[in-house]
Image (cartoon, rainbow, N blue to C red; front, side):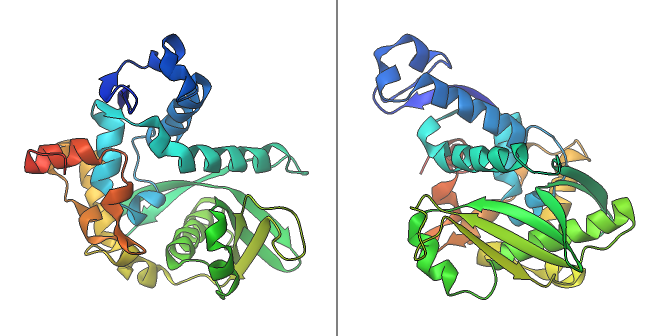
Length: 269
């Protein structure tokens, strides 16, 4: 859990009200810091095995949820923007729909999730997911036939849980990418990608971001931690070390890397 900030201007750990009470509020706006705390609580606070929990490092999420940590609020910019974009989509849905909670058994593990949108389009019952990404990804994504495989796995597992929850099987998935670009015919701010779901076994066998662990492995790690109650967050495997985002390791993007590496290697790097 976030108990304080690392202030780059002070080069020190500081209190949660630091940006509201000092001149460093001109470096990090206090309202932005508050948005980070709100988004972080929504994302990590459930204490459940979630659908997305099987697509990343379980240790990282467990540390952030349950260990006292100091973090740089600026490292959370992507989470804040993504939360704001998703909230805008939810607030203005014309049929008044909101996120849909689903749950069920995946490989013997109780897994829960929250779907951004379920919508009927023609003969399809679509599971839709909202993603904000940087503008540099636009050309690469435009050339792809379908979204990143991790997103396909995520929505495919949502489809399985939707069926278990409501007794109806969604037919296809759609990821809506959002970009901070001008609205034009060349670079529209929205890019939908519609696709067929993967089978559950293929989802469970997938190794997210080329890592050493499968989705099945990560769900069982999360279950052992959240449902077993006997494992410390620092005892979980460093799954992120083997994962990669492009040319960089997953750990380079982890907000709790310092706490994680200090516990494992007695040094933050």
